[in-house]
Image 1 (cartoon, rainbow, N blue to C red):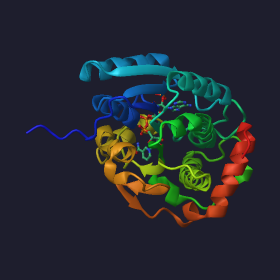
Image 2: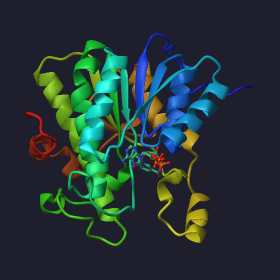
Image 3: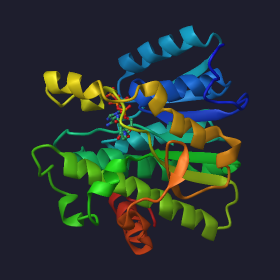
Image 4: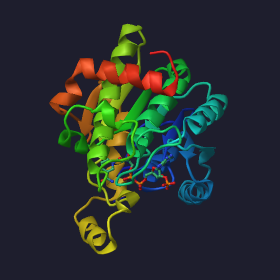
Amino acid sequence: MANKPPVEVDLSGKTAVVTGANAGIGKVTALELARAGARVILACRSEAKARTAMTEIADAVPGAQLELVRLDLSSFESVRGAAAEISALAPKLDILINNAGIAGQKGLTADGFELTFGTNHLGPYLLTRLLLPNIEAAAPARIVNVASRAHYRTGPLDFGKVRKETATPTGFPEYCASKLANVLFTRHLTKLLEDRGVREVDVYAVHPGVVASEIWREIPAPFRGLMKLFMITSEEGALTSLHCATSPSAKGKTGLYWDKSKPKQPSADALDDAAAADLWRRSAEWVGLQP
Ligand SMILES: NC(=O)c1ccc[n+]([C@@H]2O[C@H](COP(=O)([O-])OP(=O)(O)OC[C@H]3O[C@@H](n4cnc5c(N)ncnc54)[C@H](OP(=O)(O)O)[C@@H]3O)[C@@H](O)[C@H]2O)c1
């Protein structure tokens, strides 16, 4: 008997953006959205890798409607350019999946922020804010932020570290902080939408599972190979994103953290409304928007 497709609704006529859609969880997410009939905009850093992914998706889903937008989340200029292109392609944007992310890399973004915080939080923050009018225009619409259970492994955000190069040898503490930021961002965006009376724009933070994707590329090869034996596949890792983005049963369950396609209690720091509001306000200032 053939397996059930992970998306069980018909997405014909809908438009979705998936960031980091050329690899890992994002590529499977884009493929399954396309399989369900959505037009999918792959927002990717590398045009060559994105073209390869588009060919693979088109081979698996004949007639898939795919578009490519170049996006480097570590540059505000690139994010602004990508948002303008996406806005032109999709005046109504039904699904935004902020999937792209890095782990274990060190340095600074083009705008002088710690590389992981800048790429995993500030880039998606700016992209989402710039696309919000298009998303609201499409309501009912959904925003999925791919966070991580790594957010449990950090304390409150330390803003003293945000404008400096990655301080730790592994970059893992910075990764955990960026993922806490994803959950706080989800929480405060939900509150602001509710305060403005916006109905039917649902926001989700997701842990995909521990997935044998390319995210582990910084780990030396013998360890990496061994670790991956104990991980789930990208196909399995895309399921919670796809559930939150499309399932009728997730509709209206906004502002929550999800794991294995179910809401789950995030860390105490991720439930701190004052911290979420503070992160939102600072992020607005950093990216050059009004709070
Ligand atoms: N894998 C896990 O176990 C795990 C666990 C928890 C959470 N997550 C989260 O899941 C998401 C997807 O990760 P994955 O495991 O699928 O990793 P992956 O295979 O490494 O894919 C990451 C994607 O993000 C893109 N990306 C990286 N930096 C970017 C930038 N500056 N601008 C635009 N795109 C960029 C990558 O593009 P390039 O190919 O050009 O580098 C790639 O397409 C991430 O947010 C990650 O934090 C993963």
